[in-house]
Image 1 (tube, rainbow, N blue to C red):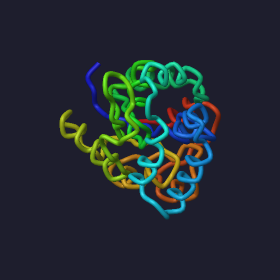
Image 2 (image 1 turned 60 degrees about the horizontal axis):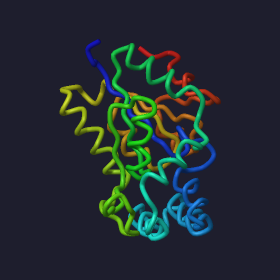
Image 3 (image 1 turned 180 degrees about the horizontal axis):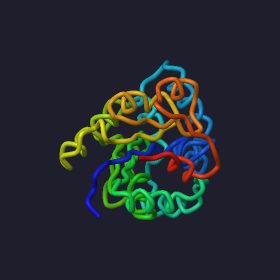
Length: 210
């Protein structure tokens, strides 16, 4: 089926409810307390995502990508991601991930559920081992720019596209597309969204779609 629209899903708090992939992995790295404090500071606007990335990256030093990817099989995910991705594709809507989660997470979810692409900050690696340094910083405006770039590549008007998210990191993207869905969202996300949806299954966002 020809792609007529694009949909961009956030990861942390949206596909991974009640926590973040950063905290999930940090628990296994032994740095949960530091990561939780950094994420709180980001949500409160006291630090930017580049600072969060730098704090988090240190604890990854010496770990294998393959080992971290094996942990991701246990991510506490929202129900019915595959069903939602398949329904989007069946309706001519190409699904992407637009997130501030590390690209190792986004790439894993693309393989597992069939998302067409992803973006995010990137950890430095040498021969499949993380060095503890950040290769690419990424923030909420980069997330918006990723979506706009994909729209341009596909020749699709952003006004025809959809963003699904839950928090302040989604606001620039919400403003750039025609439809924005605050899914189990914060007050800031709800105020900025064109539609608010709550529920334990991602398929809830499919209701009332054009």
